[in-house]
Image (cartoon, rainbow, N blue to C red; front, top):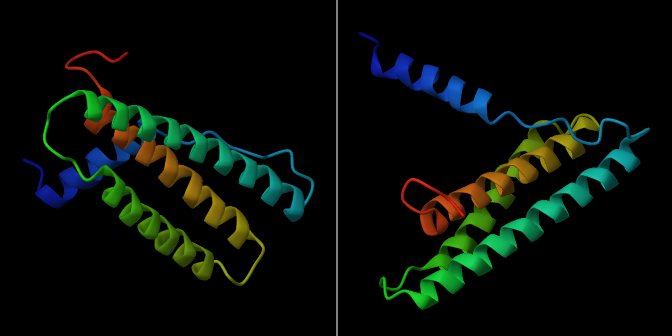
Length: 129
C-alpha cells in the first residue's frame, strides 16, 4: 500500500504529464522578442478565460442555482496569480530567464483557471459541449 504522501506525488506526476504545456515562443531571437511573444500568448489566454467567465455567468444567470460568487472568486484568483508569478519572477531575478518564467507562470495559471471555470460551471454530466 502506498503511503498518502507517495500517492500524492504519483498522482501529481501523471496529472502534470497529461497536461504538459506545449513549448511557446521558441523561435524568439532575443529576450525582447520572447517577452513580446509570450505577452501575446498571455493576452490570448486571458481572452479565452474572459470568454469562459462570460459563458459561465450567462449559464448561472439562466439557472436558479443560488448566487455563486464568481466575480469575487475571480478577483481573488487574479491576486493569487499576481503574487505567485511575481514570486517566480523574484526567484529568477538574477537573470533574463525571469521574464520567461513569470510569463510561463501566468500563462499556465490562466489556462488552468479556464479549465477550472469550465469544470465547475460549464461541463455537463459525463459530456461537454
